View 1 (cartoon, rainbow, N blue to C red):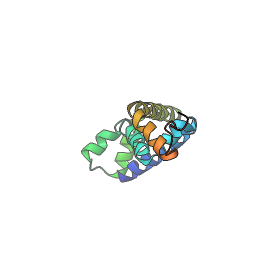
View 2: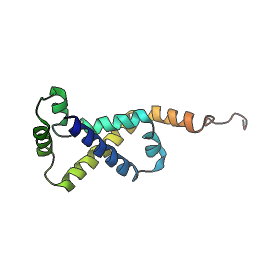
View 3: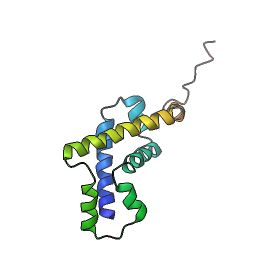
View 4: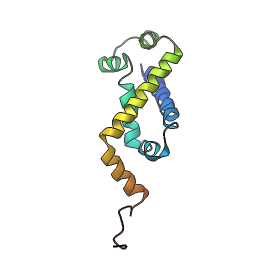
Length: 124
């Protein structure tokens, strides 16, 4: 099972990188360069993969071959369908996290990128 989890996580991270490359740098790529938000996106996607959450939750004690077969059998049959399903989950995760944490992201990026991004009182 550890092999399936590691391979799945690597595939998800690779696809997240590909999908984020299609988004504008600011605020999307900037926001998901923050380690906590990146991890939240990875978790969002992995926990919505078919059957994956249930297998982790129950810690099935099956041999690796049975687990790999079981995992693959519950994903869409064709590789293109799998990729599209994964991309859809990533887009949903990006949208959800940006929506839910927009104020925090805005404040964080403002503080880390430009410490003095507040309007100047010098101009009156």
